[in-house]
Image (cartoon, rainbow, N blue to C red):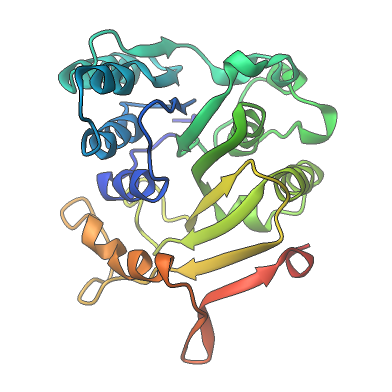
Length: 274
């Protein structure tokens, strides 16, 4: 519909949860959690670390989600119950109807994993909950502001955003990107192959990895290409976790890569990006 919502393939949520390196005792949130895919990927990563009953308690009590639509909200609660979370902290609410400036330390999280709805529209008065320079009419931009205001100091985030966010030049987008680069360390952008979100949208998307440790000095861009033998992803041939292997291998031993005269992996200083 007009909400800009679509399902995030499990391979993508699993990859993002893996790269964010969860630790037991951290609180993870998704402010537009849908059926809870990011939260279950997070739980799956953490379950590899658990050692005691206390650990399990911490893991299960430290995931938090908000979903504004009734049906995915119910599916998310059910999904977490099936993942042994006894009392899921999932709320049927709209993350965008609260003043971002009112968020205090208790409203902040160690980790945010998200694929915010984009291309969606919200009522005009939603903009009033954001500082004037960040008030956009695009849902993805508004969610990006919510994430920035709700990330703890030294917190980490991985967020899927469309090209429109990266290359858009309207005032709000520029202001949000300025805030992102000056207050957060945007260390990596993984550019996903086209059709990851087929059949919902053909839009090209990117995963932004950033943390609240200080301003950005340099950002690595890495282009993940279509795996061999695939023209497009589809419902019957979805993306798999192993398709991320080239990005995984590159992640720990970063170097610039050029293919056919075009960069596949490249590091830019913040001045170049500005």
